[in-house]
Length: 546
Ligand code: SF4
Image (tube, rainbow, N blue to C red; front, side, top):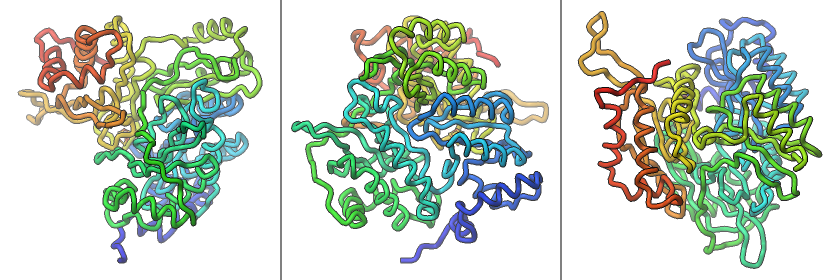
């Protein structure tokens, strides 16, 4: 049956997003923001990672793709130079292991694209209705207890989609792939359109389990297991076959129903598997014994030993925002103290990892990182508190996130000294869930709050930034999304709610091993709500101001 197309579908038929690159270069050479055709500016530019930046008066955000967060020191130094030259000296690491620059002008785009080409980096399909950055474990290939090394296949799948031209440039909506053999599934395969997770069979055979149809946003779904064993050499063609399924069967009528997750939920996993196999031209090996993957928010931070005996150093980057100086420091230290490949990786918790450091260089590189203000050892929350872009630059945001997240983190570091277990906290500026709030231990999602009994000079109710607090998420055999436990907590008091939760967890946990998630699961929702709201509503509650 022919579908009635939504507006974005119509503009893609007029001109494919993939065809906008030549126009971006032409607009950049002309240097006239006001002359940019509206559908190019608001929609098609995204296919090359270019977003209008709030408040839409001539600046852009630019997203640089990094499959699996993989970078060389030269590439990171190159991005640092672009950041200094065009982006006012700072950039953000995202939950898809990419880097976003802000304050880019139309004139800047051509020279930036030329420099990214030289650095062998791309923004192709960084946004838009196409395959996005492929996410992986940042320690793929080096993690001692990984199930299977996925570094090369992550790059291969990414390259395939980037070079596929118009084959997948007009999908119904975005398409997200995660591939890793990480022992803790830090790549969160459950919340991707395709999630490959490493498995090792009793006979020692290594490969992947496959989840399809996951995704968050305002209607979250966990990926459904297809109960097949995917051999490493099949990963690329299976990824392509799922993209074909989405392209040819995905919904294009309502934009809000256009993600693959809705199709898979409606049709079921067996139908999905059968369509994938039709494209493959062969059957995948059935395996009913594969377990649903268990994930952790632990982010491979601190110092660890690689499988080749060298070391990695996980370096927390406060809520993903770093300066060009930070980037250059890490690139220089990698060049100076790492050996061989000198690999650098970014994580989906918005942090960075330096790989390939031999034991004899650990003391010197640790001291250098410490003196640069980038110590590998940090408070637990510094590694797992993340934030999306928020109202500072994002057109969809309803509250500010980035700066508040930084302030709250620094306050909590001083005021929760007893916290000795990782607790993942997400500050998210709207229900679109770029910071994945539904699967974090504590998910904060932005919502305006009316100040009771207070009016402005015109007699109108005063609204301030606030957050709903979600708890109870779990990424185990029986995965759960977080549920709203407390609503409309004023933003300038959210630090008190978080401290209340963290202190109660430390005081009430059964023993030092009980996780925050387990404590939440056995605590009544009413008690949790009281723990959150009591310090916020206390007469002596002190707001945390900018
Ligand atoms: Fe913007 Fe919402 Fe995404 Fe945050 S979650 S970056 S506010 S769209």
